[in-house]
Image (cartoon, rainbow, N blue to C red; front, side):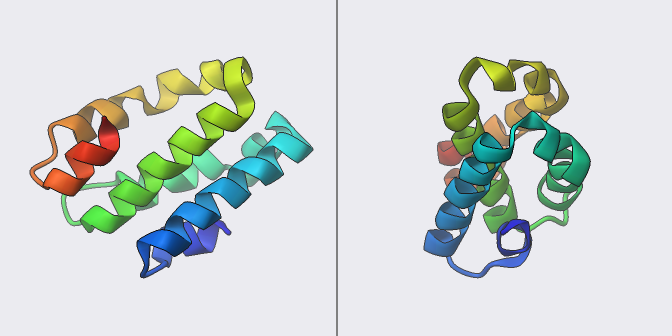
Length: 102
């Protein structure tokens, strides 16, 4: 599912993959996030630089949103790893990315 988030062409597929990844993470626990290095892959593929297409950044933000809803307070320790990416997305030049970050 992470492959769809990192390379999927349609926003509906990206959103569905984000929900599925969050559900799998909730089922298998936070160990799944750490073992699969989901956040590291997400940061490099979706927030890794200026040449990242806006749809990837939106997909990354959707995954962060669904993980936070699914895991609740258990996700709080991971926020410090991704907070900078969320803040950068709020000031992104693309309107769709800024809307997704809010």
